[in-house]
Image (cartoon, rainbow, N blue to C red; front, top):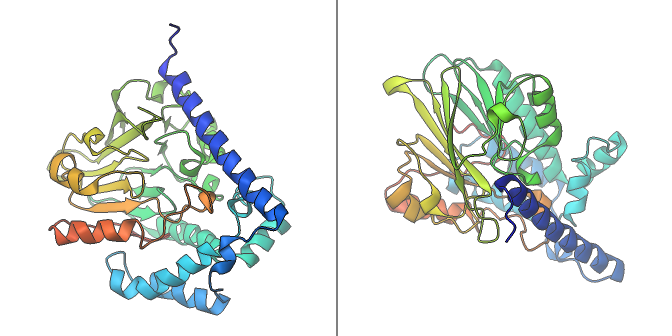
Length: 348
């Protein structure tokens, strides 16, 4: 039997997944052509004033304020559910999209204005923040994207945003868990690679930084990155690279663990106790089993909610109350520390 190398296998798996998503999009679009009812229109409309007030409440609270945020989260979810199809969102992700088209989409969907404002908020705070101690500053951008600033360098993990390339000049390196479009931005990757900045992934062929082994360790200044291969799901085994990032050295070091779309708690293999863990809230990952057996994190942060590229498909964006909040509640009830951020939140 002919064998293939791991790179080819992963690329093939990504291609299959992309084909499924395209097929689902064609079904949604055909329904629109046929005049079939769109589930978005069954959702109560959200006014601009109502949405702006909800975002104001979210901005005035923290990721630990679930009860206070509940009314605002409900408004945001209605606005998301009102979006007709993911094609409207993904159209704005294209660097070649005319400004007039983007502006029209921003005017049509208040969620997308919040999406842009969250990026601008993080960029402004990032530029204004100076880290002097061992604990880094960490922001939650969108989907599973986080931006990190330490006292010696800055980096991003799974950055996916239409404005992502603007981060290239600020980041020293980039980590990408796997080759799916909701976890990366091609322009950001190319810009950083072109500037000679490391992009650590299992698909981008920058050989000094390529995760082609099941386990590997990288070093950048005083930041150490441990990588381990993990399953995305049963159809994409070993397709995800988990990152354990140790910021600093010695007893004061701060550890971030990010598992991308890993769906198996037994594939989480930290070398030490992470200070914060970012995991997928709707891929089938058992957070409670992870907390008890493989992931002794001090803070659990379930993310990958409100991913707008999968609206009205089998992988629809996960609602706040459907995914992360029940996970947070169950973990907190069991004595663990957990929280659910929204776009633009500072996590640490």
